[in-house]
Amino acid sequence: MKYSNFAKGLAVSVGAAVMALGSANLAKAEAPSWCGPKKATLALLDGYGGNSWRQVTTASGKQTVELCPSITRYEYADGQGDTQKSISDIKSMAAKGVDALVVFGDAGPAVLPAITSVFKSGKIIVPYRVAVGGKEGVNYSKFIGSSFENDGATWGKWIKSVLPKGGNVLFLSGPAGNSQGLDELKGLKSVLGPEYVFVNAQPFDVTNWDPALTQKVLTAEIAKNAKIDVIVSDFGPSLVGALPTFTKQGKSIPALATSDGNSLGCFWHDNQASNPDFKLFTVATGNDNVRLAVQWAVALATGGEKPKDAIFKAPAFEDSVSGKPNTVLCRKDLPGAIYMSSELPAEDQAKVVGR
Image (cartoon, rainbow, N blue to C red; front, side, top):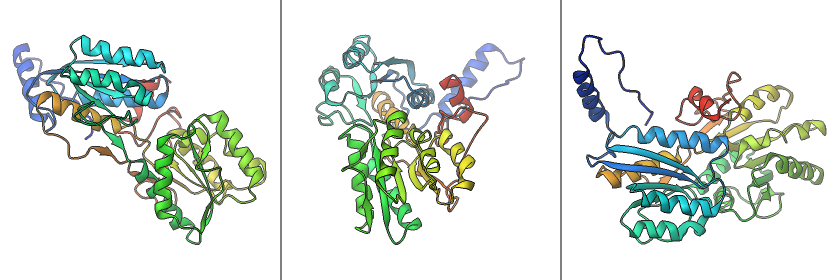
């Protein structure tokens, strides 16, 4: 659901009391089904909120909360990459009397005891995207995951469409052993047969989603492999600084299946003419995963209708070959560190990332 602003510009002659009543009625009329009648407070807690992806995600979560007039107070805390602070944030929000907590548990199972304690105290608590362990109804109210395996299958289908006879695949992911990359690999291999050879170290080349390390890894892979037909990466913008390595070695940038980002889209527009093999396919980068988590937390806290989905599935977003559902998008007038697939308008994202 797109964020909607309430009607503005009521006639000056309308009294303040009537304006307030009219706004209240309008809010009630527009309230989504997951927003129930019971008043509640809600907090969004990040394990680490210090990059543009998290900033856009946080703003998307807040925007979703604002669609429900039954939420009377909203709070936010950033764990700043510190597990102990993240644990303290969870406990302190509950101690302050917040009714519902949505938690991005970057530290994984390390935050489960705090989450469990809050749940057993009677609060609504919804961890999302990062698996924290435990069980629904025992350790937390609901876990809202993201189907990374679905992303892998989506990439695999596109790869088969542009390389029907097979080819060499280079798969890059984040930290060693991260569950996102492992699930994506399952999805890829559910679609791709043995004619698609993974040339990376198994299960994937480790980049930590860091642009500098990505460039180092890609440089080594280009030197090691005479032919790379397609690169798969679960964070497309981290590749922007590394892809020119191909052209420096006299090779065309190969096909790329990844997640979207404005910097990547603009890079494709600037370089595709001189790189004939540079086809680009993206899935939505997933900022809106938070919206589903917030909807669940609000529904449980206010007595609203529970959403039908409990797993966020990132849709296909850009395809330079078919142009469907979108051609490759680029807004050079806006920062590279925004995500055109996000439901948060691009101009609002630019304000959020402060550039």
